[in-house]
Length: 79
Image (cartoon, rainbow, N blue to C red; front, side, top):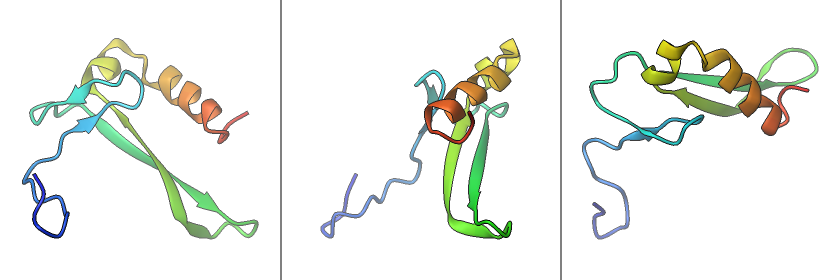
């Protein structure tokens, strides 16, 4: 729902799993969100980051490491 200014005013905005595209429910306490922060050549953190969200079902299957590797390769973070 949006207000007159066009801002989102919903109380709960569901997240989607980065690997499977499934909506992560409010009671999925096994889900995680990881943010890969960009750093400069001296190792200082920049203001840009790439968040990845993994749902609890994928973590239970033990596939979260493979999914993160695949997503990072697709985004050019990993080679």
